[in-house]
Image 1 (cartoon, rainbow, N blue to C red):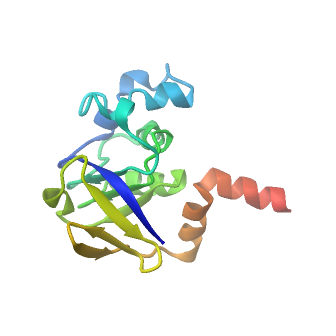
Image 2 (image 1 turned 90 degrees about the vertical axis):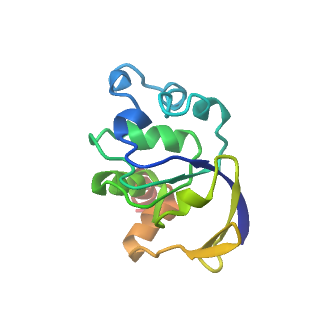
Length: 164
């Protein structure tokens, strides 16, 4: 199945404090509150204009910094389904999986796109098509794919325990 996705493009070294400022860590509780400040210092329009199914395309070292989970949850609450970066912080990469956001490494794609462009994701061929070029979507282990398809680690565990 092919689906179109609008992209938000950011550069290198976007850290967790830029994605979700630490000053909000203990004050915001609801999904709406957390989503409303996503990327506010980097892109003041993001939180109000992002739509479900949008994709972030970024440069190197996306998500470096603290282990703040809200730096991933604010994007999940925003409807982001995939983050494509040239590289990720290891902890942020795993937090994406745990929150049901597919992290994909494609070097330098961000240099060929602009915010507002669209890309096609073809789940039949496991490819991303951007500017007429097809990029493979790397496969994860079966256990990670189960987490992603369930929408994250907590939903996967809830479904598993509910079935028992």
